[in-house]
Image (tube, rainbow, N blue to C red; front, side):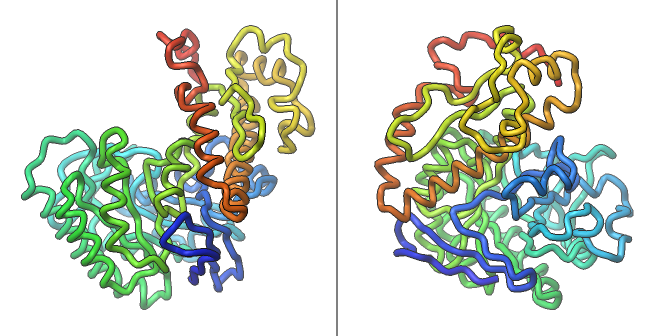
Length: 395
């Protein structure tokens, strides 16, 4: 893995991440597709191939419900196991979209909640997974404290020490297998621990870093991330969890984050919503997303977004048809919505990269925030959103 920056890496960054094993180059800032058990929700590989998606996040916690996971016994690697031979696979322990502590972590393992109950992910389990999976790159286990937990500084320090120790243990196997490694940087809400974690991690021979906003409340992640980033080398990529909304992606880009998960597309799809926001245009749409559950959609015979060129919109499938599919609980409805939402997020990132290249990112970001920041994540004006009457619908 090689990471090169196209501008001053200490500012709003534009870069290229090159994977020599697959001879693929990724332009950053970039998105990594969210998956559940190695499958991008609602999509099969043929659907995914219709989308401009190159990277997929795979969470180890989705595969370890059995004491002897079948995926560990499969000898052809993870790409073959989940039928994504041409995609770049990033393997980490936790689900990218949330942090649900199953039980207290200990000196020897991270506790994860699976369909088979609580499981312990030790460094031995991680090593077995990496040996079997052979992902394109991976991250080592982290002792992440969930935001809002009332913990003392001793617990925070212990989390930093554990995370560093697990990194040292796993690092040798990653080098032996020639798998690029990202190292987690922790520290919760303690600035001194964030600095200590970042400095110690920066001394390790790793290819990039992972930061986690799930351990920080509200907008506190910005200052906390900046505290960590100051201690990390600028010539290595940074990936962040908990920044999947467009507003958080933009703020993350503005402080030097290079990669984000695209779980926002899944979240909107689960709510029956289609993304319509834009970035970097002189005139921005006034709606952030549209609700396909709304009764008015039953009489709307235009595509989800008439200007969109995704499969769902260009075929085209009308809003009325997708409304009917959702109402009938047909699996084609979420499939078409997911295709559109993933595509729209990728177009959003293309616009972000173009904006950085043209030196107008800060102006475009402010315009975006001015247009959409008064809306919640579903595109509804905050002052007009008492209790969503459509939340009762379950796909």
